[in-house]
Amino acid sequence: MMTAKADLLASLRAGSSAREAALALLATDQPRRSAITWLLAGTLAPGDAPIARALLAQETADIQRSRAASEALYTLVAIVARYADPADVLLLWRAREANEETREGVDIEQVARLGLGAVRATLARLAAGTDATASEARAAQAWLVEGQAAGAFDDLPGYFAWSDERFGLVITAPT
Image (cartoon, rainbow, N blue to C red; front, side, top):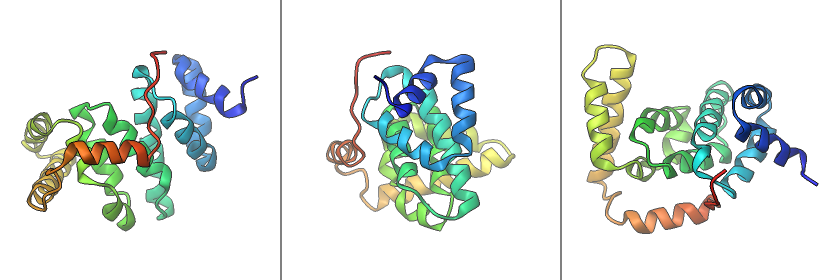
């Protein structure tokens, strides 16, 4: 018999209207979103990237309003980074910028997991504009430079192994 959390995660994985209904429920229920985050972390599947992105955006918005960081945010950052999509760089940047605590707690190494060369190219392209996204991209570029100067990228394999263990990330079969 499935639990309510497992049923909710199954709805998220089902896609389309089931996913939208589950995301709407989670948008206003941070404790339930946290529970789903930890369940997701322990059962990651290749198709879960859109779920992780949506949950991270919700968690970031919630933290911006409440001003209290959550373990779920850090876990979601690690989950999104695990998918290694350079297009997620600003999503991770926004999570980092949610509040003062998250500026200290989101590790630049998570951005490196997206692929440093591809992230640099993505940020350069985005930074060329004049809108708010360009401003964010330039700030994220500075964070990347600071991280590299501080030696954050010196042992990425070790960091990634630690991060996966720390956040309980387990890759499972495709769904």
